[in-house]
Length: 303
Image (tube, rainbow, N blue to C red):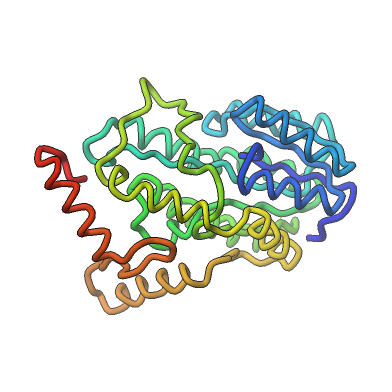
């Protein structure tokens, strides 16, 4: 699908990070942009910046985990612009809670945004694209959707996104209306992902950080700070939409790790942690650091 003036793009999680970069990239192409996010003030500021590109914008505060809210987003987009051609289901969060001993609310929040948010987005906008004669859907997953190791709830949600997006792609090949489908699976990107609990909507208070995050969190934060810019990821997504490609895999070094995992599967071998994850210390260094932390707090749960 060509990105051109007059077409309409909808982006969730658009107030910052990859979402804002996508909105900005589409605006540079002359597209009108519907921006959705749960952070009202940041969303308004983002919409104003995008409007400076000379395109029309619509900002809709949206909790993507809520089906009614996403249906209302679709209705607002159609009411304002008449149709939509491109939908980026991009909103995502990560919980730093202990997956096995922490509150279930951590799981429910992550799955609500990362998985159900995309399900709601597809179900709300697919009829709009069908009625409009076609378009393209981009779902943001992660390299965590192709290889575990980043946190159980996050990994599970992103594996689900990859699977459902592939199913959607195959289903759309049978559709009489041309609708492209892409899945974005980046590695480290310079975003505010690790502070996503600022938008906590789960039950009760934000769960305490797990021991694992307490040990390795600063390494992850540094990796994100030194990572690929959201603008570069947005360019990769734009290219995939124009070329009608399913896979958007901007980080070959992470892709190599995913391939190595599948080689173990092909040999029916047990899972093995990656010896070296890009941007992080080696597995041995991380283990040494974790053991030292446990020795310092002998009563701590190691998970």
